Amino acid sequence: MTTAPVPPADLAASLADARVIDLSRPIEAATPHSPHHAPFQMALLRRHGDVVREAGLSGANELITMGAHTATHIDALSHISLNGRLHGSHDAAEAQRGGRFQVLGAETIKPLLGRGVLLDVAAHRGTGAEGLPPGYAITASDLQSTADAAGVRVESGDTVFVRTGWATTRYADTDRYIGWDTGVPGPDLSAARWLSARGVVATGTDTAAYEVLAPGAGHARLPVHGHLLAEAGVHLIEQAALDELAAHGGRIFALIAVPLRIVGATGSPLRPLALL
Image 1 (cartoon, helix red, strand yellow):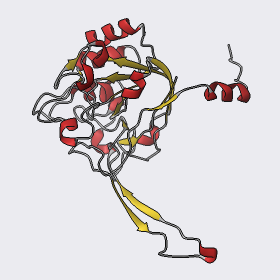
Image 2: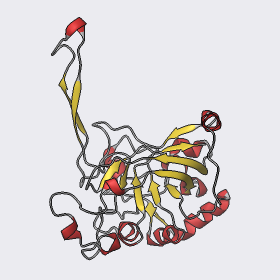
Image 3: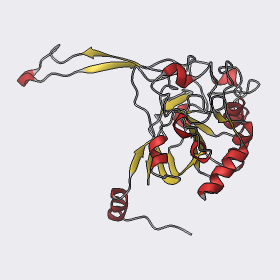
Image 4: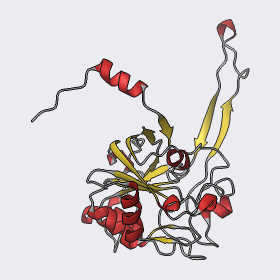
């Protein structure tokens, strides 16, 4: 059975009635970043007045440097290997020869155009403005009970955002937000398997590392990354801004999120938009 295309006028009218909520964070020098990833830096290379053209016209431009895993971003499947293998059993050492990945780079990430789901674990557990406690492991049971309470069923093809509330009072303080000393809440391996079993294409959180981090452990162990990226082929979205979406009661929404086609990169900046 084929589906008739939506007339442009009808599509425009439906979009005009939608509330659009930006799930991305601003990219600036103060943006928190993991110590393993390069920070954002920007400088003006040409300023207005450096060159003045005919009729008084002047231009300015800048140089930007940053890692692909800075601010709100999506992980490509080349980001993590297990036992020397990327997702699909590609040899990681061979794939990265030449200074960029020959397979599973950021240019292969498909745009996320479909149904988004918010599982607000922080609100479900009644944690308040501080969010879930440091190092709290969000389990499969947590995800299921949150979904049940919200009347939401996670389906194949969904992108699922898990709100920890961790960023609400911490995002402006890099050390508190990154949380290596205190630990950071996030999904554990049981939650990751709960998501992959339901066929999600991507999943994100409001933290910098997606998964639960124990106090003082940093990124020494990342089993959730290993399962979702290397085994299941599920993309991870980190540092998503989820508070406004939660405040507006967005549990199921239309999602538009398009990565940059950075050839051979392990990730890409992302600007996810939720349409309610």
